[in-house]
Length: 450
Image (cartoon, rainbow, N blue to C red; front, side, top):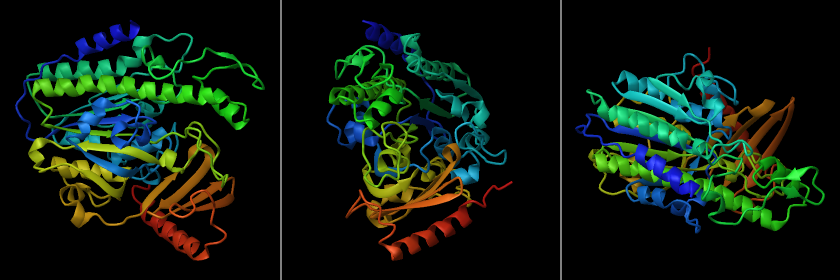
C-alpha cells in the first residue's frame, strides 16, 4: 500500500503539461544513476525485470555496449561527466574535493548559449562544495532516506524525482521557453540497499536483522559493511547474497518506475522528440566477484577499483528527432565517459573545444562501420590517499597503483586469462603500457593546471 501511495504521489507531480514550440536547440536531460552496473539492466541482457522503462527508451536511443568510467568514486567521475576532463585536469580526484576554479562546466557552456539550467543531486560529494553547481541557475541536493534504516521516511526516497517534476512544471509555465539542461543525479541504487515497499520484497523475501554465527554484533543484509565483513570472513550464508542482489535490483526497479513517469511526461507534452536524454552511471559495483590476483580489495561494494565490475557503466543516448539519425543502434566500440561532453556539444551545435581529451561519438553514431576504430580507455584518480592510473584495450588492462610511496602493477589478459596478474611474465606488454601511460599523463595532466 505504501508503495502505491508513493507512486501516485509522484505521478501527480509528473503530470505536467508543456506547450512550448520546438526549441532552436534541443533540450538536454542528463540522468546519472549512481552505482548502476549495466549487466543489471534488461537492455544489457539481464533477465530479472528491473528496467522496462529504460528498455523502452533504448528503442529510440544509441546504447554503448562497452562504456567505461574514468574514475570509480562519485565525485571525480561526475566531475568528468560535467566537464569532459580527466580528474587530474579538473582537479576533483577524491570525494570531498572541488574542481578547479578555471575549469569550465557543461552547465556554464549551455547557460552562455541561452539554456535554462538546473541540477538535482542526491549525494554530499556532488553538492556546492564540489564546484559542480557552476553554471546551474538552480541547484538542489535531495539526499535519499535509504541510508537511515531506523528513522527513514519512505517518501524521501522519491524527493529527487519530485524536485525534477516541480522544476519542469515551472519551466512549462514560464513565459519564455529557452531550451533546458537538467542534470538529474539519482542516488537510490547506491548502497545501503534499502528500497521502500513494494520494491524491498519485489524479487526476494528479505530477512530481518539477526545474529549471524561468527559475526560480531547484529547482521543486517541491507548494510554493505555487514555484507562485506561476513563475505570476506567466509561466513555469509548463500541466501543473503541472493537477498542483497534482490534489494539492489529493487532499487533499480524503483528508479525505473519513476523515470517512466518523467519520460511519459515529456511525451505527453510534446517535448520528448526535442529532448536529448542521456542515461549513464558514474561507476559500477562489485557484487561478490572474487579476484584471484588479489590486486583489488574483495567486494561487495565500491572496493574492486579497476575491475570491470566497477569500471564498466551503462551509457544510453537518445538524440533529438531533428538530429536526423535514420536509425539508432548498439555501438560495440569501447568508449569513455570523457567522450560525453564533446558528444553533447556536437549534438547541440556548440564548438567542441580543442582542450577536451575525449572525442565526439556522433560520427560513430552516424556511420558506425566507417568510424568505429580500436581505442584505449584511460582512468585515473586518487581515492583516499591511493593513486590509480590505468589503461584498457580490448585485450589488456594495465594498472599502476601508488600507495605511501610503494608501487604495484597489474597486467590482465582480458581475453586469455583474466584472473591472473601477468606483470612479471609479459615484459614487452609492460614496457609498452608503461610508455603509453607516461605519454598520456604528460599530455593530460597539463591542461588547466593552476
